[in-house]
Image (tube, rainbow, N blue to C red; front, side, top):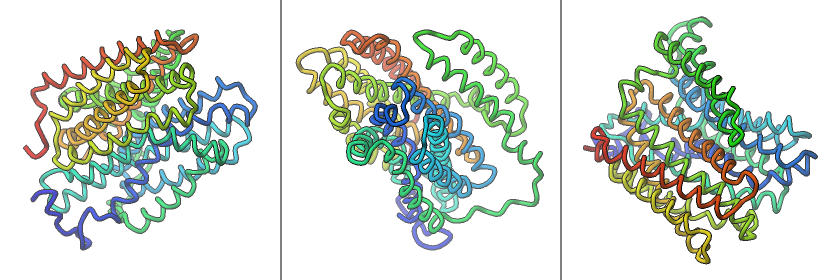
Length: 466
């Protein structure tokens, strides 16, 4: 039976009605928007809590670190406790984070708020993937529900560049606290919708002690993964003045994590799966590269537009808005047809074209080229995100799709944090045209790698329907 047949769900009606998908889409949109919305508020936040502007950068990295760790953790927890329970917990954390940040008197409380928001928003995407997978299986779908996965991608990734203009509007008309308070009404809507329309999880089979639960979650693996990710992200954030102790700690922690996970009964970071399922590993790498190219433009070129072309934060955000619109348009046909290989090739070629255009941004045609770059990267993001998600849906074992989906997002955030490191290196002293040129060459280099691991991947299917 195909996904388009829309058989009746066990509770009656269509299995993927708007009631079921609405809370999933709202929850999944919170993370990418919160990732970007803070960018336009850093300067007024610094003035509001009386700290140097440079110190507010920790509010950006805090959400990245929390998200990179929490995405697969939430997926694992959803597999153990049930996706609805984890989804609702995440929404409550977002609600708390919005209130804490909105009333925060100092930078420390704002940092706590961003961590809460990062942890809470991370629960939405992996739980949504697990809920969709289980409902599709119970409804008898033989193919991925492409339209539903496409909607999830539009909500979960393509909305990232919306954060800049939204943040600009909120700061301009309501002040910097609005970028935190805005989470409160959205979380309340998502919470009510989830309580009403997401079916309850199955009751736990028998009583499970603390030790059994910890073993099922692989708490040691989660802690090891968190420490390894934190050390990696700290090293990337320290560039260009590399802190080699962080790199050494990263190597030791990842080695220890691999040794532990190879022996764990229910591993959190399934090393054997990544080693045996190399197609899935390549999917993670492709996703990270697409996100690297997107975010290095989203943040690096935004800084250049403001510093050298005199655009306001709102103006720069609006100029990059086509990336969101185009990616959303591209996601729809790719996801509905469950396409994989050709969209991935299109994403790679689009990233190469964007890199070439960046090399010529210093010319008088900068405005036209900026629009070209955002449109082309919108194509890359829409095609790459949708096709990689469909590939993961078919490559990951059904019982591990929550954790696998969370890891996909973690790889995406590694790409985004790597983009921050690149921007820090090339704009170390000041924002220059030469630095933009370096960004263009780096984009070209990673995009060629993206094209190569797509062209020569023999296990990559044309579509999930094949």
